[in-house]
Image 1 (cartoon, rainbow, N blue to C red):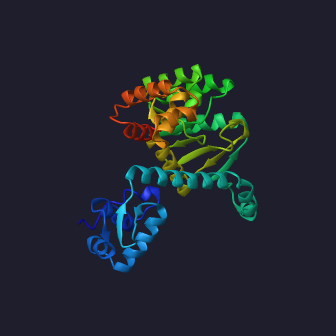
Image 2: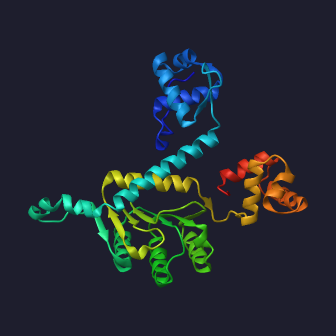
Image 3: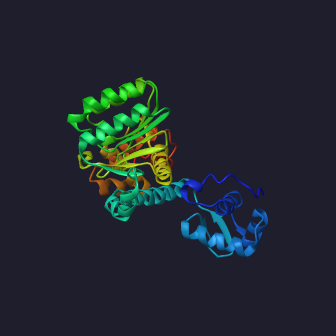
Length: 323
């Protein structure tokens, strides 16, 4: 076995040693502790500790506590991504709600400094936020990452559209838009225009935090994703900006291109039933539709997903974040 791997799962909170053990159990299911230790070049006690940690994370399974097999990679990555994103969102909210603590703790320092501390700056009102986005976009040199968790305020849409289309000419722009926003005709046209100007635009059905990241050095995070008028936090602290970039990349990897034909609400319910129940009659009864209608939906979804059976269809739909 190879004993060294790039720590590709580090972004999901898995160490290099943990990843090496997990990969070993994927390649050779049913290995014992001693075999894993030899294959990974580690001490048996360390291997035992790592396996305990991986069991807690749901990365390995063991029926007899003596042999171990790796869990399904699709489920593992999805679960770890959710855990990581949830943790990052919690950190963001804590920081966003603690600006008053910063002001209090730095009061004495501010009295003797010629310039105010600007690593974290609280902006109030839509006008300040829009002006800040405009200024940071103007001075950005390489890249801008943006999320739109919901419909853009009508009062700001024309201004946002004009500025974003201008910056798309010279910046690499990646934008994630929630499908609830794409349901608005004006936002849908705006997303199409951004794509035409070279920006990469994806959609998602998952919750989003409203944020804009400039050159991976500065970020703006809305205090309330549903109401940008409540203000935003301007972040220049490298560690926090790095975490925000990681959060964006996780969201980006789980989003879909706008060209994807998303399923309807009924089709999402059918997909969910397909993933949970074995019999068509049970799924149809649960959704309150006739067996014939249910089977028609199942057949259509399997065709769209190019899946040979219901299980593969449900798996493909979950990978696309359809439900």
